[in-house]
Image (tube, rainbow, N blue to C red; front, top):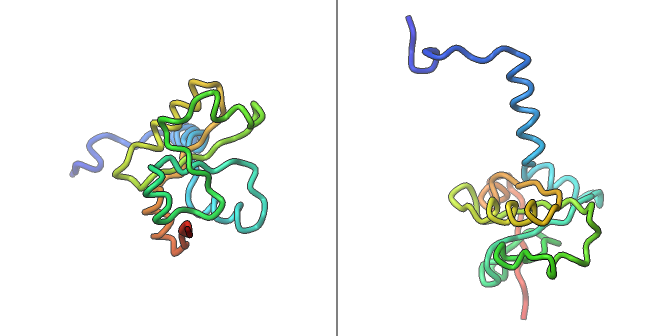
Length: 133
């Protein structure tokens, strides 16, 4: 018997390993970002690519608000060329992080997307900080 799940056979082990390893070249997750940042081991710059208003309402501690449309050479020139950037937005329903990653890549900068965004961060039980005026 064949189901919709098994109608197309799974890829072989080597091809499967290559596929999932290659995905990790492009993305990271909330847990790994949190672990790096809370243990003072962050070897990346974290960009919140949402609007300043949304950033002010709640963001990841030490994230820099850099709306994706503002990612241009002039705004990131202070970072060494080999700086690794991690971008996030609201969550899986938002493509702002993808747009930010594209802009960084076009500028020749290494970048990863934090899958899940704010939604994933909160789902993991992590907290946000807010700006105080």
